[in-house]
Length: 134
Image (cartoon, rainbow, N blue to C red):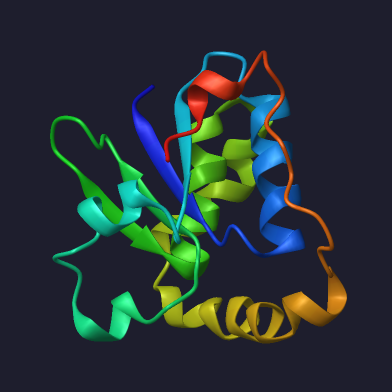
């Protein structure tokens, strides 16, 4: 696993996104960790204050060697780029300035708990459990 995807562990939309990536990541390029977990506390401790308060998707590309962080829309589109295959056609947007699409990301993020309520904590599938960090 080369990339680490942090997500809001209390968000139904974020859970759907994680499940979606899991289904398409046959090469196991991505590991996952909730923003509320110990891995996030340790790994994201040096983020700037404005980024620390984001309850946004955070992609850490090449997290074990030369980590590069992407947040909000940039993180989402970069994830598609890294998935490869046909997803790179949409993922190329990650190379554009983020102000062009972060407004849409923020709009969905503000309303995600209303649009995608979560009533239970998803339990990882035993076949993919090794890809989740605490």
